[in-house]
Length: 121
Figure (cartoon, rainbow, N blue to C red):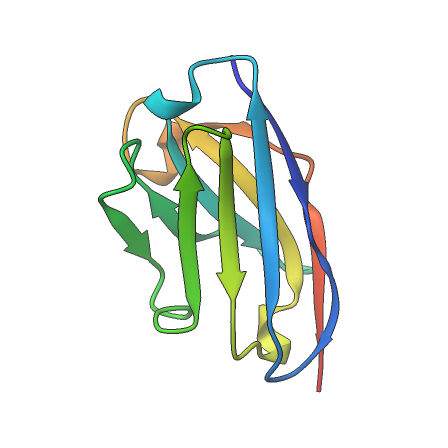
């Protein structure tokens, strides 16, 4: 089992940037597909991006393509989310997640506690 801890959330103006980090422990990090999800108030949790265990493959939600980037460092057991050109609709709690079985949303079974991102207009 893997434990995940997010950091880096905060308040930023529209058009600004933030970088979120997720530190993993307790398992073989390099074997997990890693993802970021978000949940806005009153809405369901939604997929944002994912990266394969090797870091070669990436998957993006259309809403963040060209603005957000995911990366990982298997030597440091970390995965990062670089968010540029932020919009007020990006406001949400962002969750780091891990999967051992694939890319589907239901495959992500391990979750961090979340970090709040607020984008002001």
